[in-house]
Amino acid sequence: MGRSQLAKDLAKLPYRNEVGALKRRYGDGLDARSHGEGFMALFQSRFVSGGLYLLDEPEAPLSPLRQLSFLSALKQMITEDAQFIIATHSPIILAFPEAQILNFSDGEIRMVEYDDLEHVTLTKEFLNNPGAYLRNL
Image (tube, rainbow, N blue to C red; front, side, top):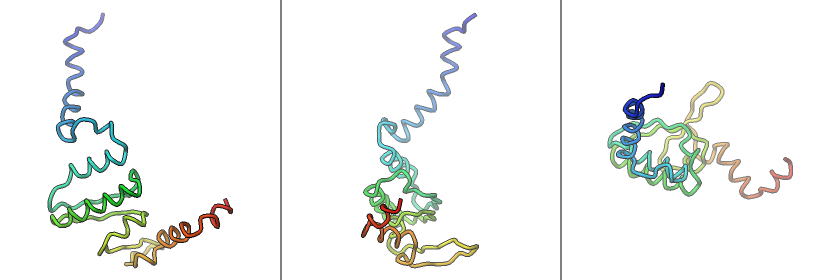
């Protein structure tokens, strides 16, 4: 015996409610955006003044240009008393003005300068001479 239409409609109700809640919070078309655009829209919609945010590699879905947009959003949020702890390998994200950069290695945590970071020096060297790295692949 098949289920009645009412039973089928009731079974779909939680899904419809969840989709409706997502659309109300994030707007239509979040899935129509690129991964980076969707991340930025989601991030900005979740922002609360005075909040503390722990972010793990937020650059993953972001192009270099979107990373700069992300830094701009961070700057605005900081003016509204938000605080951020960010784990990243991105030289762009690491370049945020006045950031305190902590390096975790060999069981130690120490403050480091931007230009002393391996990710920064390697990226600069690669961009200055990609052939030197690519010919050894």
